[in-house]
Image (tube, rainbow, N blue to C red):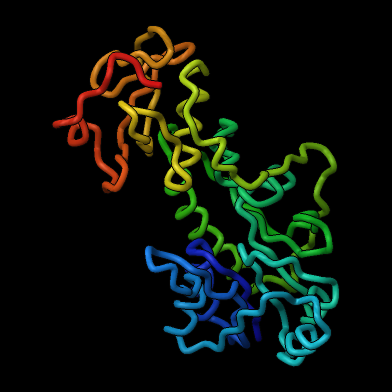
Length: 298
């Protein structure tokens, strides 16, 4: 097929690779370069960088709502557009321009976790499973009918970063299957029951509240790893907590039981990996060398 690819972050890159290996990529759309790093210089997105490496034409419009943008999109004469974590709303004249419309790769089992942060929210909610859906896009927020879906279990110590990479690989395989079998697939409308929304992660959610049950704290740490990173105050220093697991023990909320095992409102959580300010992520055994925890964490 002649495909328009629309994506921006790292999650989208393996999917672009999979499509480029089997189909003609008419153009790649991505978010414009944004200031990043200490120098705040404009940095192209992960998708733009990969597309240019592959020799693919890249477009980075700020908006797709103008008549000129819609015409430029239509002039590509694509069979289909594939959209994954692109970051711009597609107006109806864009959605209907390709002969077969636009397909979205969404990292949840729709209608659960429509919206911006489905991987984070699935872990934070304690969902036992998640997955990937290939959805025929319409004008709503992740409301279109589903062509294919694949479910996968969420591991007890799995972080958002871990699951992100695994779901990206699943999405790459599933979209190749969807294009290969497109003529024989029957879109299934999403049920009205079970709809939830994965709101964008707010940094205000990141501070750990040790009065919460251990299961809640553990899911918060794993769900916010690696970005923005759950954190706590250790002797006045903000320390990110990146990996954890449930542990035996109990005590006053925030009490350091042993090593980096912390008592919660009920139960305890063992921190497996953390990151001090200005340092790299470090395993517990290493971070505790020369770094003394107080009796109680704030």
